[in-house]
Image (cartoon, rainbow, N blue to C red):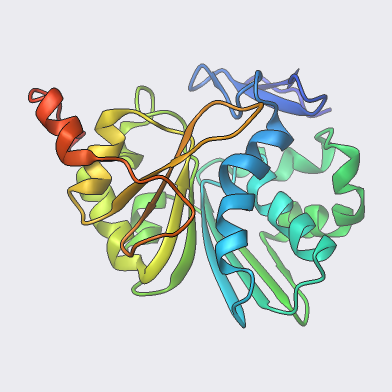
Length: 248
């Protein structure tokens, strides 16, 4: 069984299961948007549509959790029959959670990925001729610091700033800035001004991720993005002069 002292499975509105963390007192996904749906529309689709034509796509998935963002990326990759080399790196603090994922009830869409789910859960690594996935067991902040100019995409999907602030601070996003390529794309469900300020103070342009059947989200990039509506951050700041980013 997946249900443990720290985690219980919860059915979300798109029919896929997420989990509730008793430690953080939060679900891993929005139960309203749906676990699978949220991974696709807030992370995979906006990022991969920009980067899918590259010869190699390197992704930082913060944090692995139940693996939905990584697995949804693989599903998109396989369904689109992409020829790119795909590299996904993901920190995860909870080793027991990772080991338990072989018993998690994933959506039927992930049926073809069972062998990958097994290898990641059992060994923390999956590799074939086109794909490499590495789950690092340990502190995400320390992990991010080991990279420079590495990533094309960052899925910023940690527990919320209210319960896990250290993965949303200005200093954290400074490390992210260093770890990514200059044309990289960062996706996150957070639309809080504090999050956007922490990104903006590290030279990120801020964009809206909006669409039908899901709540608004955020996209950020050090470069200019097309086909996304840019947030006027100077105006936001002038209207909220007391707003501050989170700090270490």
